[in-house]
Length: 115
Length: 112
Image (cartoon, rainbow over the protein chains, first blue to last red):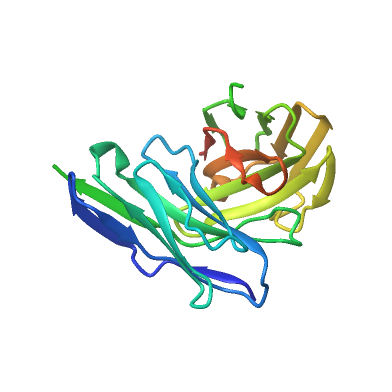
């Protein structure tokens, strides 16, 4: 079965520092998509970053970047220059190619920003 | 685009009452998903549509739950009769292919 594992239930980081959130997934597929979503206290799920498995280059969106290690089935999220507004639950999600675009979700990591 | 719009934002109802949650997807998106989020079970996919047609409703917990998408710009999720264990945040999301799902702000449902 395809699964997504986020092994860190909670992480904390000092404001302006860098933090990395871990995500691993289990699949036998070679083509798929990976996503990171952010859910702040306002509760809306916000798409942060998207990675296509056939692209070797790591995706980047401003202060957010990923470290995609396909062979290791690892997809970590790095947040640089952490800001108070980054405090949220972060969910990793996997999308198989043949899934009608359904997402398989990790359990989430709560990120705390210390001022 | 205004994004995915859900209404109401909050709903408090008595057990046994009918509840209708509404969703307007992003224009042009061809998939619509209904999710439920609770502390105990996390994010669960209830049902999804492609071009207004229900594709998979295996996540709908019971016959008390039903969903419709009469046109490309509107969908409803109905619970009848509601029970306290239905209390959760319900999300609607829409997507265009593999770009990823875009979520509404959710409806927090409390059944007392």
